[in-house]
Amino acid sequence: MALHHLLPALVASGLILFATATPDWSFSVPQGALEFAERVRNGSISKVDIKPGPGFPSLESLGFTAHDLILSTSAKAKAAKEVAAREIGSTQGSTLLGENKRSLEKRSECTVPQPGGAMPHPDGTWACYLYLLNLGTTACAAPPPPDLATMCTGTVFHGDHRHEVVIHGQGACGGPASSYCGHVAQAVNAIIGSCTRCDNWPVGPGTAQEYYCGAWGLDYAYGNGCLRVHVRRGFSG
Image (cartoon, rainbow, N blue to C red; front, side, top):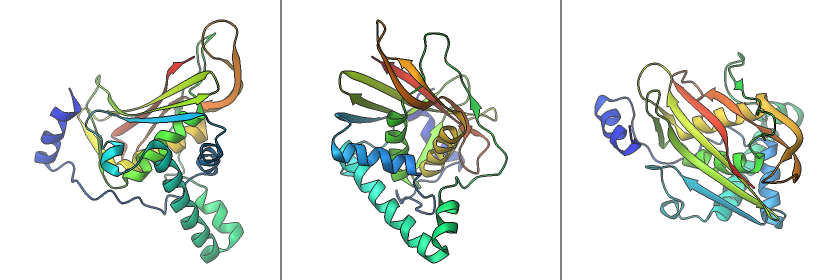
């Protein structure tokens, strides 16, 4: 079922409420996302693109380019992290704020590429993570199985190599589901934390390879076991 057909039914049923897109900065941005933003800032990533899924807010409607969204979101989160660390105590604060606010029970299910395959590139994943985090309390809705909602596609260019990562959502309790997009971002973070594998992965045709640490798998939106979130590899070459 298309997302634009799904949303009215969810709103009418009271399953979701639309709210202002206010990020919850108590979910501190992980160090990996801050390092990604720094690579965007210093130009070591030649190009980055964030494509919201159908029915999701466009970058234009948010008043951002992909570059600006990444730098703005990471800067605000870094400032909030520093304030909280001072309040809690620098060592303890860094530890607590680096953790994903979720149950201690590990829920991630990880995928291993087939022989000759590759993991999703982390930079594409971080781009979508920051987009979803920036949406804050905006609703991220997903249809029931077997359908999937494409929530975000993140594409980065490293020299001549293009890496694409897709974030999907799917109801996991027999019907549609919805959570704050910021809570979906935490599922993406959890997948990165649980499913990362490092290797020389193939990029495109031939024998070209690139060493990186990527994550492929699924987890659930923070506080919502009925919204399954997938991180998957898109085009790479």
